[in-house]
Image 1 (cartoon, rainbow, N blue to C red):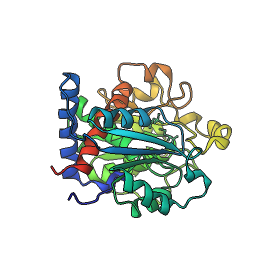
Image 2: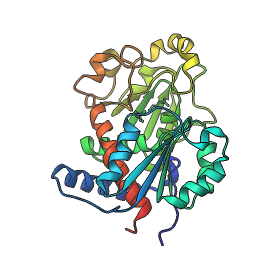
Image 3: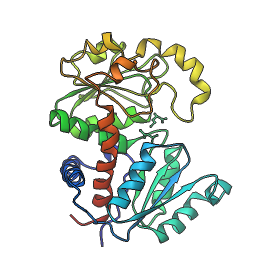
Length: 300
Ligand code: CP
Ligand code: NVA
């Protein structure tokens, strides 16, 4: 029997495991592109629980498990007993008896931790307020495809110190690259101290200098919609635009997990420009998550 492992935050996989995962992702992607079937998860079932909206995460998990020969069930808070007060621990005990894998998108990380500690099958974090590890897996795989190993590279995170930023922080420590964060006053990373790998810079210009990746995200994440107007004022100088990109390394690529708000955190000329790899990142969610599901379920 495979040892029970969850993927709740980026650091749940060690560096060697991530290297194997990226190799497996390349293989899976190549085979998919050449129409070679890969039914490694035949008869296996994934339950997806969404308490927030999604396009990419839902599609990539639902299609991913189906491409591997398995199937999925979509649950949301409104239509399930989760929204009517059934305890998370009880839901986890029941749901995990009927499937092989659970993916959850929710608000507080604590919910997913509680679910995982009562689940008899692997649980994957499909985004919480605190982390978005699957997206950063896809982003790093995208960098590897375009530029090779990320070890020793420099990544500039511009804007809100949100779930994506936290997963980048963990990735920098595990995979040994430099992350330079710049956020407006009041929106800096919480419970954070600088390390050899992770630095905080006061201005976006200082953060992007020499960066190999410039990345950003919406100014108001899901669950923070009420702060939208206030944040729009605070984040004006943290927009990724052409003058800012010009200060990064000449070969720098631009990343965004999407959905993007053109004219806010990024201008159209950057996201639609030559340095942008955002559509590769989106597609790679599919391939990297198939590798993740196999890794959690199969003995390699
Ligand atoms: N990037 C991402 O997770 O997108 P969705 O919210 O559409 O799933
Ligand atoms: N930080 C964003 C990411 C969306 C994929 C949010 O949490 O809304």
